[in-house]
Image (cartoon, rainbow, N blue to C red; front, top):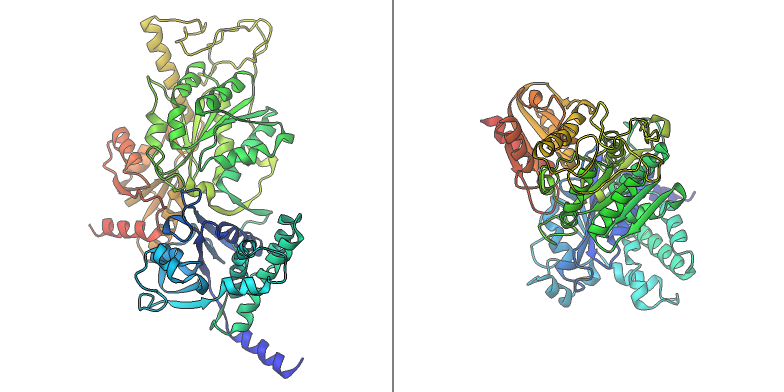
Length: 621
């Protein structure tokens, strides 16, 4: 090895800095491929062995004007050699592909952080579109940050100039140039992305060559430019349980949980759905798995979607319907039909910012009251909620189990943050999953369609079973016989029976667990996707010596039997929610506990530091 190469190797080795965790945000126009860039960085990081959390951030407009703040697309990723729970409060490094991306995302970059800008896009037209009165790269507005100006567009076009690609197509490859640079900066292997490029563009060898060149060029730029003072190394995490892992998003996990429930019950799974953001990916995922007996039906509207699923349940399949906030409202009447017919049905609501069309690509937890109470008449439906992307698998499986066991529709709450976020997931084995008992009644001897078992669940009968013909529909049923009945006493009895059946689920679910001391001054109570932020906040508070406990509700209706006991073991209860206090309202009314709300309705998840600030404020009182 020559002395020159030895010197280069020595210099490179000296400038590698080991860190525990890093938060990166890619940001650009919605056509700049930032989601692909972030996803590839995530997949590479997962295979490398880091713990991670992601936060994709989409614009609502299908195609906002290029270069405007309305069209900025972002992808944030935190990766670490330790256990982490969120995609990071603030980014350590921001990759800004244009001025609008810089303007929108600068507020989420930590002071002293790194900004890598695509210098070629900082021209007057784009600065005007972003609303900059002056060029931020030339005034003092970025003081306090490390700013690196890279000619990403020009460099990409230069290395692709001999390929038979139009300028527009070649320009689209610049995201891989930026990705290659980030792979160099954070010492990531590139073979995973190179393989992906080869498979993704297999039908177009020119695109394979172009994107491969761009990725390599970005990496080589980092290697040779001597622009960056240091490279950073985040070693693989070692806290994981032994087993086979994959990176998984919430909607993928939900789909797999449903498929596994179908497999373990031996029943076909039918999904009746009408596309809506951010739930549509479940329809897309399940549609790929016909070989497992999965039937998907894209209905003409939400009402047709849920009623087709009720029909599938009536026929003896696992009926499922998926939607988001406004679609949930449209399904309301049919949910009442499912309650009256007492058939198993899984209703999945991937919450988004509302009301109405609201913020369709942003996250929120504001459908809780709709899920628990939002129907006509006395119409109880159990409600459960996932708390992490990987937990979406377990919650979907659990929903099928409860729906069948108690012969009831059940609502599963997730949200946009969980649906599009991802984390490492230990792949489960079928034999480790709970058994789901399925009992179809076939004996006509003593059969009554609205007789009940010890759980108050009525028998499930496939239509066409000889001797078991019976009426079904939305009109009130006579107790036991199921005949249509208008008698006041019978109606009140049936209302109470249906309510008690849902209440009985509390005997079949785990008790509410407390992480930390079982009693004390302050309990932080959460539900849904706030789990990661609350856990990170409490871990930080413990490190500061503050004693705070945490309980998280996965079962919201009914709640675990010991919920009141747990809550009354603490002087104060803090409930962070991405709404104006919906769980707080339920807790106050059910248990007469004056819960303290921490509420955020900004279309983005809590940062751990926001919850920490409220905890410290309460502890000072």
